[in-house]
Structure formats: C-alpha cells, structure tokens
Image (cartoon, rainbow, N blue to C red; front, top):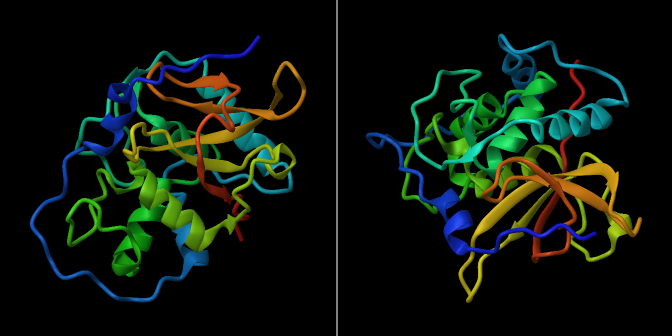
Length: 230
C-alpha cells in the first residue's frame, strides 16, 4: 500500500508565514567555536548520547514523534531560550526535526541561534531580518539547510534510494505552479512495502507521519548531522 500525502498548498505554504523579528541591529561577526557550542547547547536538555548508534537513536526519536497528535500550526511564538518549544500539541515540519534532535540532547534552537549570531551574513535573508531571532530562526527550513551545510555533512541530491540512509535529513520543494515551498523530514529505518527505499518521518499538515514520500517532490537538500560530543 502506498501512503498518500495531502498536496494542498494551504497546508504547506504556512511554514513560511511566521512573523519576523524585533528591532534591527548590526549583525555580529565573531568567529564560532562549534565544538564548544555543542557542549553549551546541551544546556538543561538530556545528556547528549555518544557512539555510532546515534543515527539509530535519532531515527527512534523521529519515529516516536509519530505517536503524538500534533495540529499543524506555523504561528510565531515567543519561546524560552535555550530549550524553547512551541506547545506540545502544535508544530510544523521543522518541529519534527527539532524535537527529534532535542531528544538526543542537541538543541537546534541554541545551535542555530549561536551560529547565526556569529555568522549572520551566511544565512538566508528571505524574511528581511537584520539580526537573529531565537524564537523562529531554527523553525525555518532555509536556516536549517544552511546550518546543516555549515556544520554537518552535505550528501548528494539524487533519485537513487541507495544514497539515503536512516538518520539523514532531507529537504524538498513541495510547491506547485512554480511556487517554492520548503519542507523537511528525517529518513527512517523502515522500508516501504516494495522494500525499495526508506520511508520518511515528516509533518506536511496532518501531524508527524511515517510515509513513503522520499521522491514525491524535488529534493533540495540532503544532510547528515550526527555530532559526537567531546
């Protein structure tokens, strides 16, 4: 059986509609020590796990998200920092990724915010911001793509299922009629019914789901971010 995914642009375009930041200030230009950042990013989150099984644990965390009832809601919300999260019963595609990594002790809110603070000019300017916004930056797919490019492993964007491994992060353009709409998910370790490719954990409007959608849309990014704490 093939899993069907809603294609309505109204469900996915909302990801890009969250409000922008506060008063503008000149962006900082300090260099970033990513190793130290990983240590501080743990904050009050669970102790970051170690070892080669970290990719499997990320997959397990993503699959656990599919047990939650989540209403798709891209609203801009002021969050605690670090470790801030939108209400448990709400979220978007990025929140699946954020919550999965946080279960392993890696806080993408803090990681992305600190990296943007140190290298703001390297990040997309899609929203007209002139400084980082810790409430929303990590919840935007283009920012996550840039972060994974800078601090993870960038992998080939192909249509060969063999190139995609459990724990990989994939982004797509799910827009229609020439409209670009970003989407993101995590490759699972569960094969589809035909045993030809791994299924994906994502949220495109109906909450976190495990679905056979790896090549349903053009792939715009393919990353591996399995950091090993010192």
